[in-house]
Image (cartoon, rainbow, N blue to C red; front, side, top):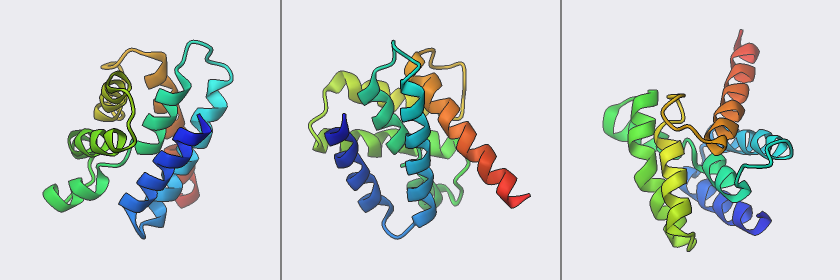
Length: 136
């Protein structure tokens, strides 16, 4: 899992470039997801880590194409980018498809009904709530 995490983190950081806010958000979500994996025996650690690292990968393209990082645009633009990054890393197609499903609905709970989705969703919500509290 660590090798996969390192490779995908590097890909995510390269893709986000100088956007430290997006990089730090993804890293924090990944840390919370990793913590949750200790309690979720039925979760697939590699799938959760991949989805956590890449969950917001569509934001730059959403902003470029739609002038907005709104949830629906992130969910639309993220999967193709994530798919390409994961294929470059040689990940199994089954994992790629599951991770892309999580990314495609990571702001839309109830569509994907898996433990992996729940772990990533909860981690993202936690980070977003912490960030809102800091801004309040």
